[in-house]
Length: 218
Image 1 (tube, rainbow, N blue to C red):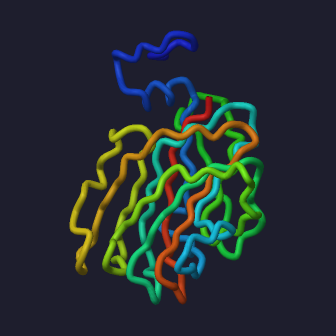
Image 2 (cartoon, rainbow, N blue to C red):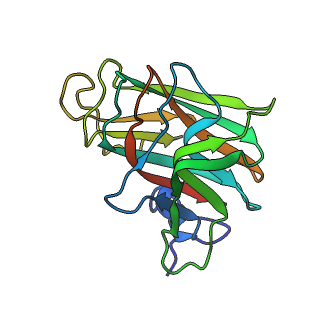
């Protein structure tokens, strides 16, 4: 029996994520387990045609990002920090993969027939030029003084701090770190894109991550 109706979710019973999953509106896009995707050899400044993650809403419903978890599987070369800039823009800005691929998307409710129309890409993703309506919606820096360690987990949680299992551990030195940032909620409306750019000191080889992206489509 459903714990939420289509018109009046019983939110007192459980949290927002379970309600969305119960309604068949919660999806997860992820890499093949144990397989990372290498990113661009990036520049010292923000290059808006190079992304490590991109979502295009090709459907008629809004996409609400909930979390993105990135687990480092291979270190970058030639860099001491990474900065991550998130943008929203009009249209589908996907152009090509230098490396990487579209992520596999599954509905978190096995009893739901709902199918997501979001297109989720990760790796070394080439984008078209930004439009005049591009918005920078967040900017965060992980590992401010060191290159990172295999097994590091970096997580964004949009609009909530509920997904807090990558609790803050050392961010400098040679120890693994699990860090998450709670950032402002986002809405990717139909016909628009969201992208995350990784940049910092010049890489000769980009970082490789496993990706797990949770979102609501409603």
